[in-house]
Picture 1 (cartoon, one colour):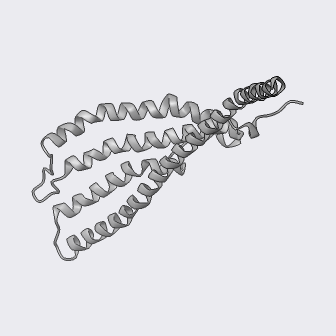
Picture 2: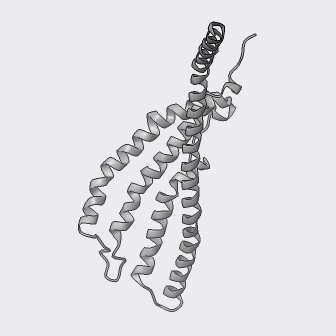
Picture 3: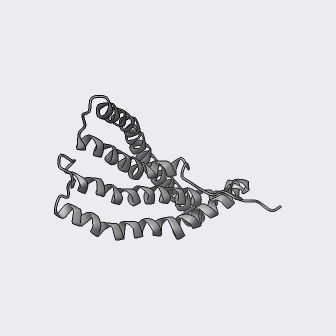
Length: 206
């Protein structure tokens, strides 16, 4: 019995040591998995929104064409129709900004970025996201909120007779802009962390 108890005790001790050694690796892997899932969810959100909002570009072109034809051919026109172009343009620009960032189609002056390795690009993306992008998004939301809130308080509408009574809704896009761009920036930052913590890309020394 003593020998069996000793062997059992040794097995338990060995299992405990192995668990202590593997626990950090398991937690690290689980953490990377969760970061990836969060980034994927943000990407999916902005992709869905961008694909839907993109149709406004077609609608905007059609409405503008009809506005010109009605005005110069039939001498007809409506204020709400003209203002709808402004609404669609503003919503397209503001709401699809996160989608644009996801596909890296935003304006960027690139001098050395494309020549860098993936890990160095990840460092730049990480620093740029948390030092510049996210603070800018926060400041935009913070300072725009009172402006949008005041518009909602009076349900601000068009100052033109026959205009769209929904200026307060259009101004809401100002708040949606930093939220979606900030989320997409967070996704880029998380992917940068995943790149930097990827052991497969870490140089090894003999």
